[in-house]
Image (tube, rainbow, N blue to C red):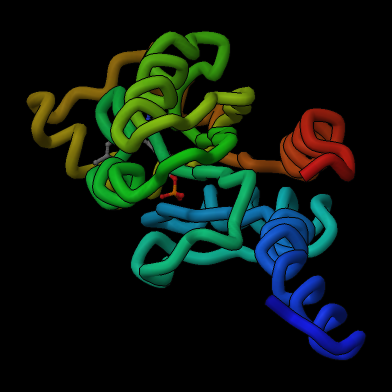
Length: 194
Ligand SMILES: Cc1cc2nc3c(=O)[nH]c(=O)nc-3n(C[C@H](O)[C@H](O)[C@H](O)COP(=O)(O)O)c2cc1C
């Protein structure tokens, strides 16, 4: 038992410390934006979204540190890889626990067809534990010409009019409007309430 006034004060400070530390940890939470991008489209979108969230940090999947305690929410940005999130993002998602997660993606096709994205996002959130999916955002992303060529060869060398029109549609994306929409979307989702 503390006896002097000084000892009593020291004891009180020690008793309050865990509470203070917990509060500080809460205050210290910063939004983390994690990107998987092969040809740069999703990275460009990721930068616009990061700029819209005060204090947010952007990293590639390969740069994410071991200790994720101080990060929340976590925004996962990825490209459409045959109707799913790419493997590096699926691996990273297994390490997320107790996070508010939002997802954004770019795809070569029509972003109105977003069922794959919803499915992929739900599966990323479920890959860890105790996570919550906050919202998703999807836009077009230019298909790399080399990728397009390779796919054309795999499909027998012919480009159907539908495929060509999809390619043309995505050629200029993500454009300024996509970037502004993505930034505004997540600003309104999170505001300052991290
Ligand atoms: C291997 C591969 C598979 C792809 N699969 C799809 C697909 O199934 N649907 C689609 O709309 N776009 C698909 N794309 C196009 C990309 O998702 C799209 O161009 C995206 O914007 C690329 O993003 P990035 O520049 O961040 O890598 C694919 C691209 C590659 C390289």
